[in-house]
Amino acid sequence: MTFLRSSVVAALLLSSVNAFHVTSPPEPATRRELLANALIFATALTANQQEAEASGRGYHISRKLKAKEAKLQESVLSLKLPSGVAIQQIRDGRSGFEVKPGSLVTAEIKLAGIPELAHTIRAKFQVGSGRILSGLEEGLLGMNLHGFRRIIVPEHVVKQGQEQGQLPLPQMTAQQLEEWTAAAANVLQYEVQILGLN
Image 1 (cartoon, rainbow, N blue to C red):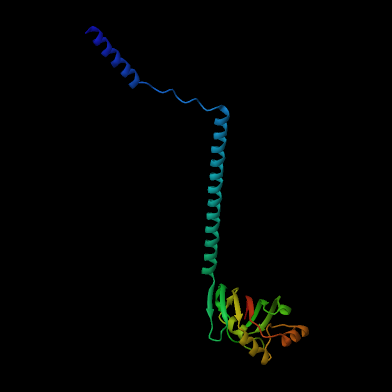
Image 2 (cartoon, helix red, strand yellow; image 1 turned 30 degrees about the vertical axis):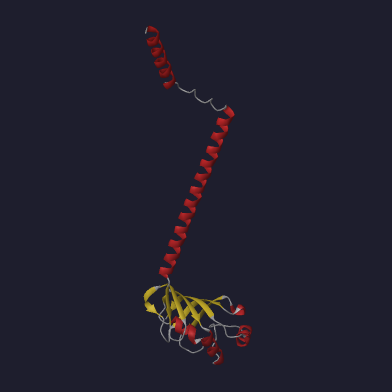
């Protein structure tokens, strides 16, 4: 009986030891492995930060460009006249002093559309005299002193002006006049700033 009891106690003790047996922890990684893992982590972190900064800069630059473009579009008032002449009002100028038929105007005019005549001139001329292109005169009407406007004269108006002997600019040399007469009708784009007005 005593032997049986001792055997039972021994069996219980053995099962308890097996139940609470803890496996030994894995061997720690070598120093080289730890350094390699740390280097990989640091590289990935730096790359992510650089990517975030780059995308952030691109986002802010894109926002600034869009805001600037929107502001420019708001500042330009576009209008198309029945003749087909298009006007883009870039700067209003001084109100109360505006170009009317018969006004004597001093203006700085930049012309594009005919390579031989593509340059900027400063000229004094009378609006409504019929000497210069009707499309240009039409685009000048209503401009204020110190105003700045882009005037786009369509091809059919240019052709009509050529046939009637009108000039694309108030002042032209004989050579420019010859080139103008021989040039094919084309869309003309003017940038005009009113410097003086009587």
